[in-house]
Image (tube, rainbow, N blue to C red):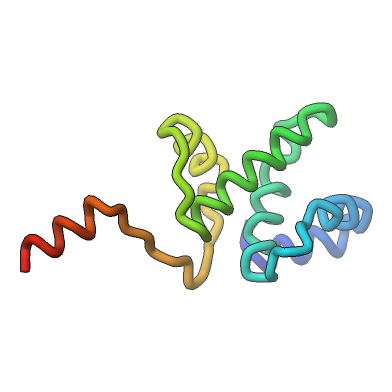
Length: 108
C-alpha cells in the first residue's frame, strides 16, 4: 500500500479514516503520522476490536524505532518490521550505537 493507495482508501472509507485519525497523537508531525497511519491500516484486519490497543502499541514501537532510534527486544522488533514491510519512510534518521561509534573512532 503506497501513500497514494492509503489516500485513496481513506477517501473511499471515511468511517475508517475518521476512526484511524483519532489515534494520532497531538505531538505527531505529518512525517511521523503518515507512515504510522499506514502501519495501522495495513494491520487492522489482523486484530479484533478488543486487541486494538495492542495494534496501536505495536505501531508506536515501530515508529519509535524508526524515528527516534528506540531499541526493543529482537523478537519485538522482528515482529513490527514484518508488519511494516513495504512502508516507505522518506528521510528516516540513521542511528548508530555507542559501540559502532567507538569502533569507527578506533579505525581512524
